[in-house]
Image (cartoon, rainbow, N blue to C red; front, top):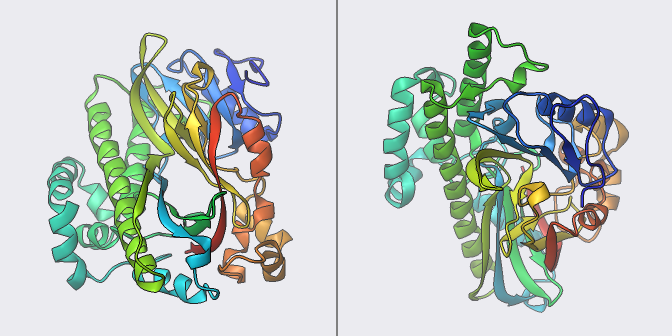
Length: 402
């Protein structure tokens, strides 16, 4: 059951699955719970922390409306993990070469694939269907294309790329010493510009209809409007692109692993799930739009991935279908510090100490991802015993970051 059942002064209850919530996040949850479109309650996961407008680690049910700012700009961000038949003893003693090979095959940060190599292969696999759907979206919303230089070339060249921030590729070992590949990314630059375009459009809608909100980033589209339908089409495209992006990265990562280690098979446990998205679902016999902003679906028996920070454990879980959380759970550990605060508090030496034994970047460029900037993943897991059960416990041995 939730640790806290409600917040004062809210139109609907807020069910919070932790006692570790900062004041800014509480205010954001109150803002969401006071929207007329939100029903029947808001759920806050154990990794909850302040975001932009909507709280990260929140599950927001809306009736006949969607909040683009709650979905955000990293549309479809999520996780992919596969278990292999490899064991830890088959990995090389020096993992630096494996990390370098992954970084060479999968562009990270602002890097992307070369156009002359991608325009054939990527289009054959997934590009044509995605391209046709995107043409329809951009034809109606031409400013999307103007927001990203070389728009069509960019989204194709970013298919199978990691990006930066908290996105990562990891080689992990489970409790049976089996090797996993796990990665985290989303819809890249194209998802970002789609998100920004519709967030601004929603703000204009609120102004046009003189609807006053506690936060402009909670502006929404109402079902039945043309912009609502356009957003649903665009956000679904970005979510599908994010799935394809993770699948392409996984294909490349597995090819690297086979080349650098030895041949192997996949073990049948493969998960590709969003944790930053919106979907239409039925809960308690009501048709609702469920926005999971930093949360994953955890229906009864559904498999999911909850990563820890660099240097911490990660978990493969099975959902329990808890109705209080709208069949959801946390998407990770959740930040305890902002990126700026982490950079002011820690340095590269601290990062090296906290990631000892893991082959990863240890320079000042990724200090904002230091484990101490995140909540304790084991405390987060303890708070969601009613939401998921742990199937596998993973520890990282290689971590690639942008």
